[in-house]
Length: 132
Image (cartoon, rainbow, N blue to C red):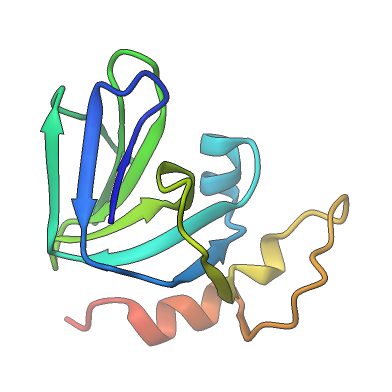
């Protein structure tokens, strides 16, 4: 798959992925104005063109964006070097919504009709947080 930011300056390439996962956490919603439509892309991600800018949003992750147009590009898990890309970068893909996380932080002003598996924030940390 290949996608790009709004101005076309940052081009991102990754393997084929068909699933989108939604994150309703407060940080994703503040960052994007709504839930993050996330494509889990692992470590096989390549950026060409303009180098993305990044903001270290926690001890374990950074969020990337185009330094020219501001398009949200990725959530990067630093301990595992995994990239979670914004689905909006890939306009031609026929994604399927697979799951939703931080469902307990989803505001009441929107509902999705998709029937997907969901996890609360606590369940996410219990399942995915690195073990000391």
